[in-house]
Image (tube, rainbow over the protein chains, first blue to last red):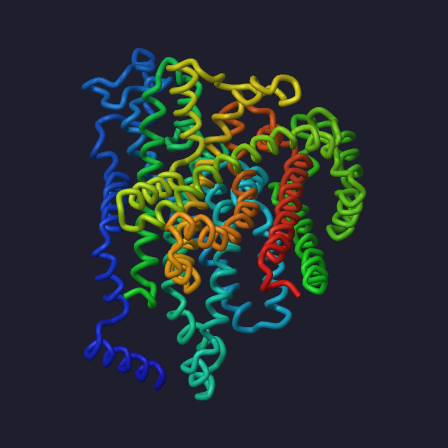
Length: 296
Length: 313
């Protein structure tokens, strides 16, 4: 209890005299045009996903035999697909699957990877050796191939694709957390916390974890980009979102079959994936520069 | 050096062990009774019992693993449920196709990524640097299966220059072979070029600020000699070993690109196996990829020591 009050008053005192690290990072991030552009595009796609039914007048799964593969027109800006569905409606609703998959799968990877990395880095010894070898083994299987194999065995669905991507991304976070913990745990303030008799879990959670958050944040942002591509790839192969629910990857799968007669089916879902992934990469790169303590 | 090699080799053993456990446990993710799943449409209890006996599914899991790993170590990866061919034979048949693609992709990646990285570092802050960075962002953010479809649209459907799909072995007709693989190789190489460009750029920037480059300039050497002879050589050594490690990315990418271009390689093998519920093939492919990756990692480490005299001895 005493510790908590001490911790809070210390950080309050810090905020009064100095700019907090988070605020400094934000100030640096705002100066980066690329990162800001990325944030705006991500915000736009989130709005599209949330308010999808209010934005497009068409049902993304309503088929119509009289509208099969119609070129873009005033009624259907992005054209219609092989079952007469509105491509714009499917691109807008597809944002839900992609963004959810990106965020949830990396959430899974963080939830498993960070605690394991903390334990491995902080405890060392046999547990560390065991966790590290398992991490090596998972990293030896290329990310997407592991995700495909997991999704294949779990069965095709959006939920299973998220689990497969999340588990495949986990070793990156174990390794990153472990490395960060190893470098932080020898710092004087951790030594001081230990000398004061804090229990191990408290040192790990209160003294070490907050100091490795910046590195985790950068990696998580860049990994969301990779996870969105992975979800699109699994859906493209038929292992993600199942028809008729819209997803950018499965739209591209259908589009490839009608490339000669309906090229518009290809452009929009691909462009949507590209824009979202590019934005997460821009924000990730910007965050890395903004959070780098060496950069001025 | 020998000491280091021995240590690295010993480290590989537990990694390979865990890889095998990981791949073996995949089949226990199957919902329900694996024998029922493997039997597929078949509902005959005799067939299911036979599958159960054949895969030792009636034994405890560690015993099942022992049987499985014993087979794998003697080159028996099981057989494909679909066409009854040994998995190892299937892999040996498909791997050369993907290796050709991978070799072409890596060549394209080096040809684009390294010059782009050098130019952007040497001309830091100019339009060249800006352009190269944009190219890298584009390469990292473009889903390669989309790029594949767009290239097919442009070069096969609109212009009619290249075949949209299919594969011809190099030994049969090298021109047709190159024509059939150049687009997929570019798609695969493009993403890796972007990664190589970023690494080359930062390595070059670091080297250009070093003392010996300043000395070389002070001696009055031309900028060209300084960059090509002094800076580049040192900056590129880590990049070359990094290229080897990108093979993992290549094998992942090949899964989608081979699907795009209907190339009968390693990637298409795993996708077809997934859809035919041919689990032994899926396991075999993942195990082979992991083994290739671990071996390449080792070779990259050794190469790094060989080219860096400071690490020898």
